[in-house]
Image (cartoon, helix red, strand yellow):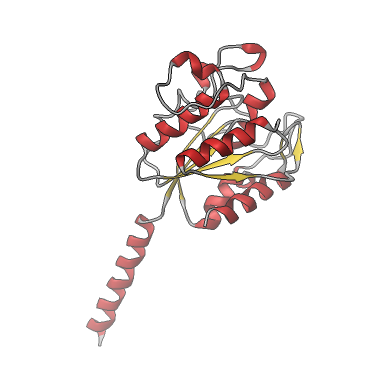
Length: 226
């Protein structure tokens, strides 16, 4: 009898270990909305959210309040990497027409680890900075074209699919952006067969999610990612 219970116990333990090892790994690929002090790789990227500090611009002061932490916890996933940079654009064109190539999503695409799931949450700064929209294009890309949003976003999705062929890719689109940005994202996502999650009615302070807004993002993304 003891031997039977021992065998059963070992089988249960093995199953638990196997389950833990099989948790999907998730990479967050974003901008300021997804930053948090101490949870960014590499840690040289600029932040918006800090531990215990509001900086008079937000009420989010704990990593457990972020949309991605809540989502990962509730889904039973594990964080592979959070590559998020405050102010980052998809294209190379940043605020005041500055060259943002060094922080653009395209430049950072090879630094996402080995994820099973990629949650791409960007384009907010392209909209706010007034980056050129450009033309739809899906092949024969040239570097100078990436200063416009549409070719930059198309190239980004192509590179993500080529670089991480086994990962499930989801694109998250912010609400309250100029219409040509989310509509262009949807067209390009359709071309590459990528699911886009369009957010709505997110509570914000200084243009960024509050504690309530973070919860709303987690709920809306969680509902779309089954």
